[in-house]
Length: 195
Image (cartoon, rainbow, N blue to C red; front, side):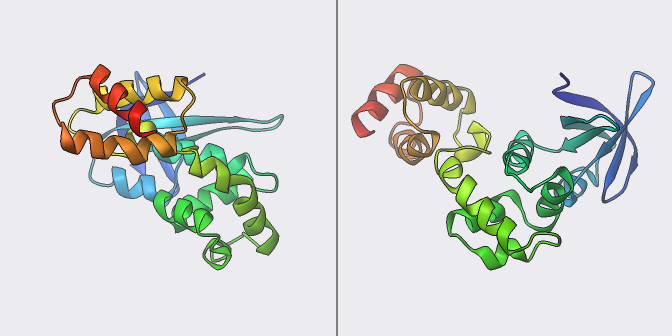
């Protein structure tokens, strides 16, 4: 499986990126979010979702792992295909999509071309709990810390202990604000008292 492709931007349009890596030009479908992120760059790292069906093979590329995770969450909903998910990520930011789902803002979701009432309701129904638990988000996006390596380590450990990413994300920023130079073990101990 391809995780990402790093290379030189040969061509960039609002819907497609041609990325050259070792003499091979990859045609990668992108959202407007990714287009805006890559606009002023000559080199890029595109996080890939490899879409393979009987008659077609496509690469969908994203500027961040966070956007790719949300894309995968969206296409996991029945009735939402890759085109609809890409349209959502082109119309709304990742954070706006999450907020619309969490606040059950059906009208905001319906404002995306190709998403009707039933699809919007299904998105809210199937994804609200997953988003609350931190699904569709890269760990590092849930909170910004001085040292994301320590934050990621603490998050992984706490997740393995059975806590949800959403609950962890609520507690860790406070701990890091109190003790910005805390070691991983300290962060975990303090988090266990608060979770």
